[in-house]
Image (cartoon, rainbow, N blue to C red; front, top):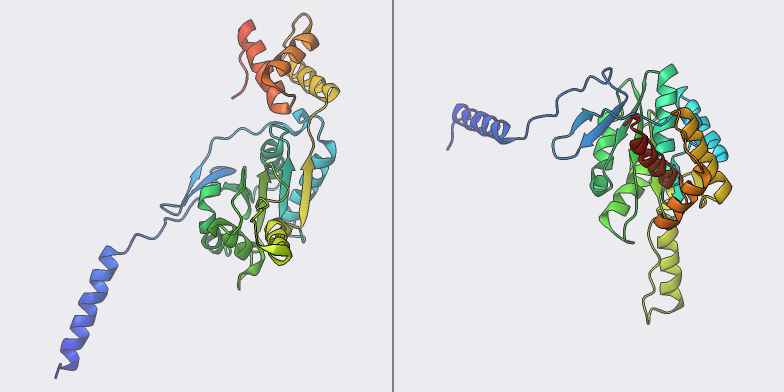
Length: 281
């Protein structure tokens, strides 16, 4: 029979061995050194990101969307109730730029606001990330760009659980913002032979993920007048001049196959480079 002293010594050696092989705990992060951070799922660390947000006034043609996002950010900074945000719509219309610009603008007057970007491929880490942030004094905007996944994927289940279905629920000091090209994040499936019941279940699955967001903000395609206003706004801000500016901007959009805020900015970058001007990154 093993003596109690021997058993205690054996258990102590086992505990010490487990402690040696266990992964190190993530180091505490000094969130005072930056506003934007990237979350590293592999290490559990937060890395400061030298991101320069576009000034809010340069986001043209999205006044209604801007008012909704900045209003939600303002309430969140003050600890008031706010819904998680899904910004959906045409590509290049300023969804991610608006999320970052609104966070930066709010952080200028409320330094406790921090934006943490989570890669969409790391969504299964979202519940653990929420737990990491739950008891910290800062207020975190957790941002996931270009979110989409197949219906029934593990990422979808993690997101649904983190935002509403989990026991703990999302922390009061976290606002989750996602962007997507689709309003319904999980695309509809059209399985043959499933019948009406299967079709109804598929429709329910399609909307169940996006239903976790209380605030849906749509971004329609940019019309010609708004596109030209964006080009003119950028040109005026950075002192760029060109003959036939509108005509050249429209030709640029035609070659790119569409008009958007991103296309307008790419035209301005080309125009600045042509004239030897330097733009902010």
